[in-house]
Image (tube, rainbow, N blue to C red; front, side, top):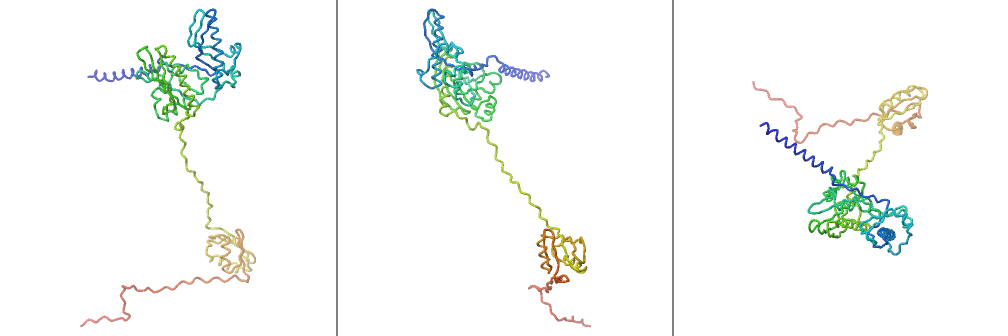
Length: 435
């Protein structure tokens, strides 16, 4: 019984170790990863066909390379100026030797006195720029475009998980003369997990934004090829589809064929070159515009907080100084009694008493100084108001008379209601009881 209980955890442990080993093997596999060629400092023209004879094989080969340099410069000049090949200038071989950095052999056949080859010529960008008539040999380029090569073959969709001819074609593609600024992936590190074939069909904008920021790109290009073989190692047919954007909008497409498996590599290289032309035409037509959904949504507009201006507190009770001018102490005492009876005055505090001159009294009043002066003037005083001072005096030797007290209204007798019984005014004696 104990053995059965230990058997299940042991089997689960073996399965977990096997799964982890499979993932590790997938990430650490040596059958993936192709570094793209750096062609930023060179200008290249390929596909130059030469067929020349000579005294011997070496002389014929040297003569073929000379012809390739001359035709390559004319083709490059015509391409950069968008002009016919016949209008390109002729440079001497000594000048061409200085500006040509290398000659790439695409295919060659060497005979005893004949040389047939397809060559590519690379020119040094800085040295060739003055002869090309373009400063620095620079082209107007697009924003950085993240390129994902996708291969569909035998019902399997792959990107850079394993090395394939389509990824190699883009890795070896010379992008210096292309108006598209490609961001090519090598397939190493985390590339197979982040930019696999499944990611090419995912619509989620949030993950696309993260990938574009991670690889330093601004837009997305998906180069798709559907490869069909008649039989293993036999003739092959490939349908190339150029897609753009996170939704895979079709830019264009074409079909190429190869006679056998040996020609698949050349077919893929030609497909990369022609697909670059499709992207260049779409860029010139204004079709390679960044999808606005890839931009971060604008932050929500917060309502503007209106700062309320601080309201000055209203002083319900103000303090004023009342200056009373009189001839004797009775005048002062009467003025004090007068002030106590003024409505709105809360308190009275003598400050300086001068019975034969001017006395000073501190008054707290519910109102402003003009209202206090008006209230004293209404009682017969001659009042003069300043900022916080009210001066009062009287024309006569005595203060004005005190106002009479308010007359209270007489109390009215209660009026009987309609349901109250009327009482008899005469008082009746109760009947006496019989003896």
